Length: 320
Image (tube, rainbow, N blue to C red; front, side, top):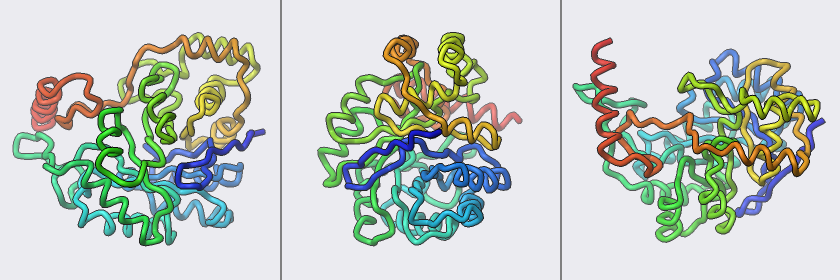
């Protein structure tokens, strides 16, 4: 059985600790998966405009029979809608697609802004991503205004590091309710974790099991994780989900397989010994870093690196 733990956001609202992620889920699959998840007991759905499946997520919510007011729904503002005058229209489209009049949480998906317009991934004649010269501070101020409309209850950010969060805190009036980041034992981000905790910003962990973007072994495939799972009589996914919740973060596992959806919702208390073993797996391993955008999202590689990555990506896509 799930422990059904919840956290309190700085906005005063409660958020279920284990949410259901909808990234990389095909439209028809995600409809059934959301329905299954809600019937199993999930009460937190994490969506995004760029996932291209919000209409189906909304249909799955309706088909589940669970009342809207019992579900915590999150969506995210995509990179091509960062100009303040575009933000509310983007939100309205998400609300229409999801079939709801409000979101419990609306997040800026990335600090990186793309060229304004309806092209989700705008590139120039060389295949290089076109970025916009607008600060994420201005975008966040646009999110703040949404709080007065009744269309969103809380706002937050995603993929922000300490430096960018400090800038938001210095120049904006509403402390982000959450910072949604990649987090698992391979990527614990201690400095960011401590900073967010100090400032009352709840961390949400996406890709809590690792992911397949790089083709490398995922965290859930780690031999030590599997050993711990066997020792505790659970599966590796349950270990990583429970680890994330136990360290005080929301966890957002995703699946379209009914059995796995159900198993992922069975979080538990991990003994101290096993928690320490999982903590020891830190290796600063990111599975999700879009260097090809030409933007140093995490301030870890430098502008020259991402500029070269963007050019290489453009050359590769033009050659295909």
